Amino acid sequence: MKLFKLFRKKKEDVAAISQDENPDDAALLNPTAAPQAPTLSAFFEVNYEEKGFREGYLYPASENLEKALRLIQSNFRMELDKRIDFAQTEIYSLRLHLIDIRDISERIEESLREKVLQLEHLIQTLDQEKILSVEGEGKIAPALHAYRAGFIKGIEQFHKENFFISNP
Image 1 (cartoon, rainbow, N blue to C red):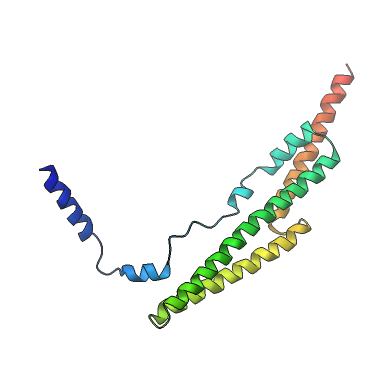
Image 2: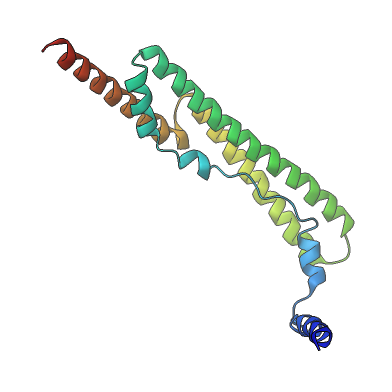
C-alpha cells in the first residue's frame, strides 16, 4: 500500500503545477541559479557607536581612532567592490544569455536588456558611493560619525574612572 501512495503522491505533485505558468519563460529570464548578491546590510547592522565606545575605553589614543575610521572606510569599500564585481559578472552572463535567446522572444530580450541597464545604474551608484566614502561622506557617514561619537565617549569614561582612582 505504501508503494502505491508513493506513486500517487508524485502524480499529485506533477498535477499541482499550474498550466498557465510557462517554465520556459522562467528559465529564459534566469539562465542559471546564481548565488545571491552580496548586500551592505550586514555592514550597517553593526552598532558602531558601541564598538567605538568599547575601543575608545580600551585603547584611548587618537591614533587608534584614525586607524579604526580608515579600517571602517576600507571595509565599506571592499563590500562595495564585492557588490560591483557580482553585478558585473551578472551583466556578463545576462549579455551572453541575451545572445543565446536572440530572435526567440522580444519580450524576454527587452526584459534582459532592462535588467542589464538596472545593473549598470547600480554599478554607477556604487562607484559614486566609493568616491564619497574616501572623504567620509555618503552612506558611510552615519557609521563613521557613530563610531567617532562612541570612541569619544569611551575616552571620556576612561578618563573619569582614572580621575576617580587617582584622587581618593
